[in-house]
Image (tube, rainbow, N blue to C red; front, side, top):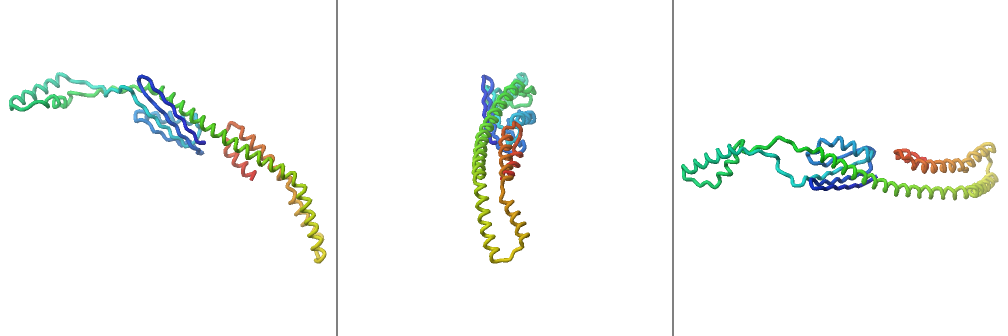
Length: 251
């Protein structure tokens, strides 16, 4: 089944949006489009997708943004900066050079500005994102169920149409048998009036042919197949392969 789900979340700290698209497939073929900082979550979220959707060719996209994002934590060595700045200023005065760019030069020296190794903690964000993903997966599964309901109703209409035609066949069958028998009897009388025939062989052939005229067995089997098809459709389990086999038998 095809399905689509979308869920959004926003608070004073972050904004997130999850989009799930699914099309029919015999297996779970899952593709993620995630921000780099959540690449390690792919396996856990893959299991989450399988829990909700079981199978299908699924694409899950996550858009994530932290509001008022600050630059990576940094440390300014003020003493070192002043040392470089005053040294450059002294050199500029000695050669009577212009010094408007001394500040920019001084901050670029090694160890003046360094970034902290402290990592951003995403633990709280992960809890929120998992809930958003679950909401999107639930919507996707719901849309697949709705499509499945439409398809199931269409199949039931087809079954009912076959049932109705089977009733017509059952009503027409006695008349058909009588008509064919009368035509066959007339043809045999005409043929035997002018041709010599083996009576035993003719009787065997007639019995075989008349047995093939009787479609009672096929009618019973078809009715059973239709009933079984409808019964299997009500099963909560995966039934696609079963229904495909029964459909072949109906044909």
